Amino acid sequence: MTRGTGSTAGLRGQERRRGAPLRVWIGPAVAARRPQDVAPAPEAPYARTMSNLETRPQEQLCGAGSQGAQVEVLTSRDVPLGGPRAMTVRRTIPQRARSLVGAWCFCDHYGPDDVSRSAGMQVPPHPHTGLQTVTWLFEGEVMHRDSLGSEQRVRPRELNLMTAGRGISHSEESPRSHGPVLHGVQLWTALPASALGDRPSFEHHGNLPDVFAFGARVQVIMGRVGLGGRWMVSPATTHTPLVAAQVDLDPGSDVRLDVDPVHEHALLVDHGEATLEGEVVPPSALGYVGPGRDELRVTASTAGPVRAVLIGGEPFDEEIVMWWNFVGRSHEDVARARADWQVQLEPGADGAAPGHAEGARFGRVDGYAGPPLPAPALPDVRLRPRTR
Image (cartoon, rainbow, N blue to C red; front, side):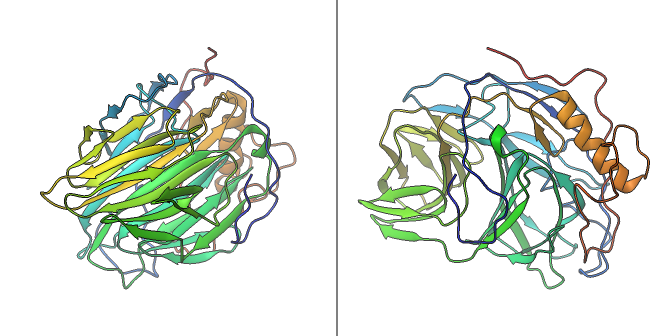
């Protein structure tokens, strides 16, 4: 683990175990509630941007994918999220072709969307376990509140990083004075098994390192990345070796990013005509390259600028079960987390931990006016990770 300079708690060194592909369940969408401390509006189009939800539950059976230097282009799928006038995000992972890039297990790309006549993002309190959430914006603002007492506004080129550990709850919403556009990405990393019982933590980093060279600006979000022989290291806490960075290219730019050759990498293109190692990666698609390269060539056509997000990390081979907002190692892990959340909403809910006190695991989010989100029902079949 690398410890950042933000506020952290209960973090320790990690051990890695070689495992298998994963099985992912995606839950149904739930309509949002409108808080009283944000701009009133008749709808909340970003009701579920920060949660792993779809309108109908379905199983995603995912393999680890092949390794190597050849570029694999993964197209996104449109995922409608909750509410009577649901917005849509573009999801690249997880999917059948590839479930993970390093420890990155979830990647949603949204906007740019006009939120000038709505309340913008409205995500009521909801739980997480076994993961880190990364909120990264290109345009707009989001207010984060969590059960640790954190209250933090995040703006473009600033990082909000929440580490769930054994359990945390949080809300995210557009401030009352939010701008007309909301645009960004939501990323999750899976925590290794040795961090699943850790205490939750939250960090905000508002001045992350960047470098300008060769018609490019590269800003590190997590981990480390280099450009022109200059390495940038993020102060953000990581639990496995990984990297994330925003890459902006002027028209016609041709750059080589310095990266860790042990890592696999993927480039999510936000806009512009980009290539990764000579392969065209369309907007909202993910270009994947396996381990074995110490640099990645990224180019922009002369037609216009490019903005992209690089993610990567040491291949994460532990078995995990991911369902709704929970990451665990077994069906029982997920079922217990769901029950422990539900008992906060419905005292006496079946399956909660013995002797569970209301709010003991996930806590309470103060400052959000509406009620928390109930968990969807578990699927009728057992959630199990697959073995190789």
